[in-house]
Structures are given as structure tokens and as C-alpha cells.
Amino acid sequence: MTDIIEAYLKKVLNQKEQVEIRRSEIAELFDCVPSQINYVINTRFTIQKGYLVESKRGGGGYIRIIKVQVLDESDMLNTMIEVIGNSIFERDAKSVVQKLYDDKIISKREAKLMIVAMDKSLYTGDRVTDNRVRANLLRSMLANLRYEEPNNRKAD
Amino acid sequence: MTDIIEAYLKKVLNQKEQVEIRRSEIAELFDCVPSQINYVINTRFTIQKGYLVESKRGGGGYIRIIKVQVLDESDMLNTMIEVIGNSIFERDAKSVVQKLYDDKIISKREAKLMIVAMDKSLYTGDRVTDNRVRANLLRSMLANLRYEEPNNRKAD
DNA sequence: TTATTATTAGTCAAAAATAGTCAAACTAAT
DNA sequence: ATTAGTTTGACTATTTTTGACTAATAATAA
Image 1 (cartoon, rainbow over the protein chains, first blue to last red):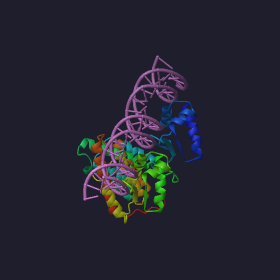
Image 2 (image 1 turned 30 degrees about the horizontal axis):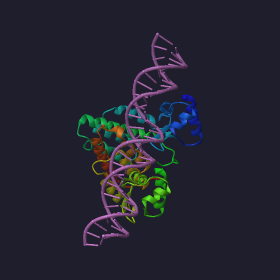
Image 3 (image 1 turned 90 degrees about the vertical axis):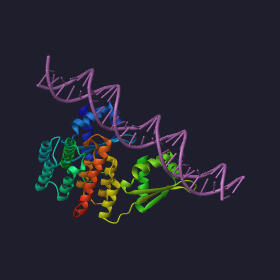
């Protein structure tokens, strides 16, 4: 069943850059429970496989799958994400950003944006919490740099 | 329905600086309850998205939506820093970043970096703390942009 | 001028309409 | 037999829609 739904979605994505579905409709179409759709998406449309997923709940809700291009620097970024782990000092975080800039993975403006966001003074004041939140932020930002969206995609 | 009404109002605002409506008329036009109009305005025409709303009750009452005019980039950044204040929700923070992107003050990559950094899931889990830290981060990042040379983007 | 009524818009919370999570049960592959 | 992958459904979270009630202003009557 997962394979069938995956194939269906990929067929659509072969024609278009993105596909937008209503979860319950697809579930009905393939006669399965709605959460099956989440399973398909979580296992087959991951960022590693080159897909980005957005969704909205409530009236007019949807799930949108977008094909993205995984960039060359992805491997290096993954390595850095691992190095960051779940806690990082301000000093080390700034070094990571500096390295990205030195390696020309990010622009100067991007580097400065990221560096100011690593500053201790912005956080809670609790060292353990702060290092953890900082790591979360930095990892998320790096993860975001791994891919590029098609530029004709519908704005949200 | 919300999306349809939003699109309608934005279309009018594309031609003019402001739009003035009679709540009951628009509700009738789209066949919805009047308070739906308030919902659209409260969620789609916020100050974070660059709109001001004025209204009057009673005979001849109206709702007026005004596009906020800012002079230049630095002015816009200062305005947004004020709007952020010392606490901001994820949703509103993302609106602010989106607005800066729409106005071409930041690039798409910069916008994405900032938007992922606003995500609730990265913080402590305590709402009050998180909104405060998020505001600190966003204000710092915007303040930083004031002193940078404008980015030289090609085509995003 | 003051009080009353009519005409608007605003607020808030309940209900409805979505999607997400998680773990137990099931199935297939080794 | 064991393990990994899949299916299912109960429960949760988010967003929109709806309507009863409230508040403000204008128009009218006293």
C-alpha cells in the first residue's frame, strides 16, 4: 500500500515541481487510514531523498510535497550537524559559522546573521538550556542550507 | 473561505493604498458570517504583515485596511524591530521575515535561515521564555542588517 | 439636550474540519 | 524465531467557521 501511494505521488511529481493533497481524500482514494499517508511521507518523501513537506491543519488544510535539489555541500553540512550535537558553546558555534564562510558555503551577510543569533546574551541565562537551544538553532539553519527549492514554486 | 476573502482584499490593495469595506456587505458577498471578516483581518492583515486596520461602528460604520508605508530599508528594519518588541509568537515572527523578503530587504536564503530559526520546536518549551528569546534573536538579526551593505542579489 | 433605538463592528468560545503522533498489532523478510 | 517494515486507530494539535453576546456610534425621539 505504501508503495502504491508513493508511486502515485511520484508520478504527479514527475510532471510538476510540487503536489498538494488533502490527506483524507488520498486516504479515501486508496482506501486506507489517513495516518497511512503520514507514514508514506515520513518514509518516502524525506529531505534526504530530496523532498520538502509543508502542511496546514484545519479548514482548507493540505499537505504539500515539494521536490528540492540537494546541494553539493550537503555532505559537509551533515558532518557539521553531527559535530554540533545537542549542545554547543557560543564560541564553538561561531567557529562553525566562520568555517562555513571560509569555505564559501554562506555569504558574509548570512554569516553575520547566524553569528549574532549565537550570542549568549540573547538566551535564557541558564547555561545548559542555552547551549541546547543554540545547538538546535544552528543545526536547523545548517540543515536548511543543504537544499534549494525550485524557484517557480508557489509562494506561501 | 478565509483565503478567498484574503485574496479579494489583497487584489484591491494591489491597486490602492487602502481599502474600506462594510463588514456586512463583504460577508454577504462571500456568503459567510460577519465575524469571519474579523477572522480574516486578524490573521491575514496584521501589523507584522505590514497592514494597519481602522474601523468604526454604528451607522455608516466601516473597516479600513491600510498598507503601511515605510520610507526605506533602514526605516523598515526599525519599524519591524519595534513591532517585534520583547516577545513574539512563531507565527508573527515568520510574518515579519516574510514581509522583509517580499520587500526585497533580505534574500530568499536569508529569509529561510531566519524562518527556521523562529520555529517553536527549537526552544525550551516554555511559551513565555520562548517568545522572549525568539524576539531577542529576531531583533538582533534585524539590527545587524541595518549596518550591513545591502545584499546584491541577482534573481530570487 | 438627553434618552432611546437602530445600525454597525468586536469578542469569545464552541463546533467543525483538517493534519500529526505514537504505540500496538500485524506482516514480510532474513 | 527474530527483526524490520507496515497498518491501524485512538488520541492530540491546529486552523477555520459559526453564532450568541457585547460595545460603539449614529439617528431619532422626547
